[in-house]
Image (tube, one colour):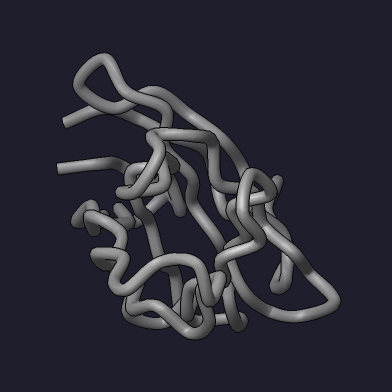
Length: 103
């Protein structure tokens, strides 16, 4: 398991980037009790994915694709693409001390 952060440093609506198995990754604390983590690489062009707090979505700025934070599915993608795969999820666990780990 790889430690990502402690929940005291990550408020609801905030995100933190980390590295997971050699790839860029992102952890979002969507609510007080919910976390979502993904490989932060767009499946289409392998560009970085960022957290857009205002939209409450993950965003690939390369072609403005949006992904649902709760399950990593495509919310909206550019009309020039027929299909974009969903983001790859990362399982996380929280210990008794509120440390968050990628598993």
